[in-house]
Length: 398
Image (tube, rainbow, N blue to C red):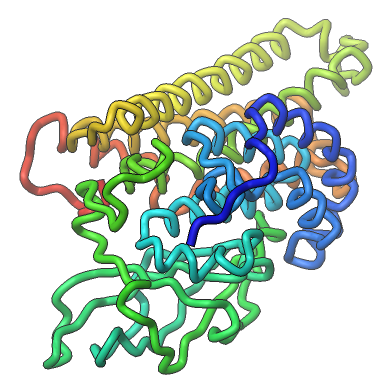
């Protein structure tokens, strides 16, 4: 099935301009989304209308098929309004990209009748499967499924078993949301509006064309050999890792903006400074935070450009290059969290007032920074082992 699009895909600059136009609405709904522990539907509708969920959807279904750099920039722009909403945008886009690595038949299942379908996902194979004629029967629970309130499909990790029931491989399966149960489990300190709840499968049949083996995909063997867009040749783990830095970039930028704007009007209590802007100590803190945020952008963009250049050239990066993307992601995230800490200290105790968006930025960034695949110390170790050519790598996800 091939679907023609009525209009050409917008450029990244056009998308960012559209997001800027709806930023006041996203900001208005941020507190309500946090209280509801899900993004307000008005915000989802507005983001859908401007195309924020089509960044990495194949163009044959009306998507934009844009490069990885665009995924970073779009989620970062949304994060300047709200971190939880940006997380949903980032995860929905990367899961749409992931679905684009499956067979064309699987892609038709998702978008053939509904080009606007959204996809969520969890890589961890927290399930049991039984091999049957034509596919597999799947039972499992997948926690922290970001954007689960808004998804039409889910890409879920599963163990692949043989006829004797023994696990022989790890896979990903695409399941329609209508065949999945749901448990509201997302009670956390930050990223509350991401709605990262639990999806449940109870003996659901998944046809073989909607199952993908993960190890070959890690090495660049995807179901579609000749994709229509370069991005669907991009390296699996680097993409899945790096996109999680996007919301952090926007959170860091917004925190800097808020503190910088208040500095000429906010005094430093119990000192002779009439404004923070007069204080050399404050100036040094502001400069450090700004440079850390710049550093995060430089490393995230370097990684994105490496991924995009390789996919455009039709090459697949080696282990060391892929490991560096994990390290770049960890380095970017670590610099953003440290920058936000510096900014909150510089701004003062008022940072933590409920009415101050800085406290939500701080909590959202801190929670997102603890996602297992972006943990800085883990990612540095992955990269260090790759640099040394060691054979005791701590994860296959490189």
